[in-house]
Image 1: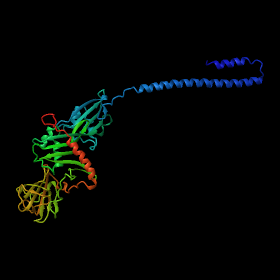
Image 2 (image 1 turned 180 degrees about the horizontal axis):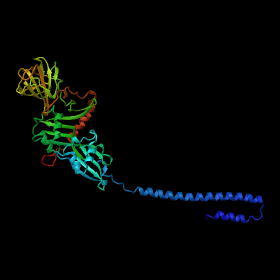
Image 3 (image 1 turned 45 degrees about the horizontal axis):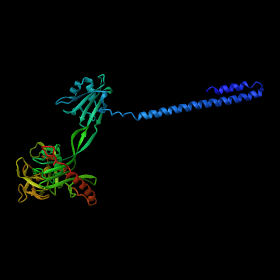
Image 4 (image 1 turned 60 degrees about the vertical axis):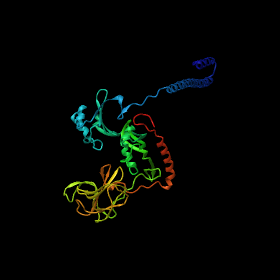
Length: 450
């Protein structure tokens, strides 16, 4: 069929026996036109057929691709695909040096030196600690490619051995997992946390939040807590980092709530009435003063003539200047300090804070141990008793039994929820109270809920 146009032309030429030269010229033109038309037709036919076939093939491939299974994500460790490397792990042992660890991995002295030339901002080999992990990644032919050191549970450094031990610091992805728990106190809050299958460190967190409302030294058997908290995880491993989202504590039948609320770009815990749970401290325990000595771990003592820690702030003031309690609390000590403090008073404000007032010339009339004092109540007067070179007040603060700088504690009372925010706070408060009430409490000796 493809030769039909040529055959027709040939038969036509054979019939032209008696034409003139002019007719022959015209005939040649006609032949050229017919040949061109034939070629175009044949080409179009071939292209049309090819296109139809390609369309059928493309449709067939598209259909098959929809049926292909999606491969699972490649498993990685330190950002490297684990199937591509042989990984050897190690842990820093007590009194072990980094050089000893690297020798164990087969590193030469020159390689160890090259690795330690990494900037301290990325990795400081002098700060390695027992328990920290490291790893060596080798190719399938056992050629060492990367050394990895975990500088913390949330970060690590990779050393590219083939490129002069160039180092890069990385952060592991972290996530916060929220948990709800409720428990009943049988002996202490610390034990109650353990019995509720959660970290006793949360007892410390709760004491910071409720410290102004509940005396955790006086909690009794049967007191209850309900808690919503988040714990930080890295690569599915839980860390000892906690964040309390909301809580309630029922002591002696009185329930106190801790409801988080953001006001003026600051999140604080408020009680059910919208008042801040953070108690107020006065800025200073006396009105007229100047700071003559600050909190330090090494101060030259003017009497003893040697350096020693001074874990307080000295306020220089005239003898007899009234000294106030910076916050409400119970007088737990009143008397003479034989170690140089002279006349002193110690007040426990809550389960977290204790304040001490030293070198007093005298005490407020009638004040005795066991008395409850209010904020800015006069408890004594500035003096120079004990080891002192002049009248001043040596003021100290202990937080959970440890001395802290008195100038860094929160001194001013927090504002309650403002009028314009009360409606929003009410909505949040109601939802939090319901959520806390719905937390099931487990019995300490079984998995049965109450």
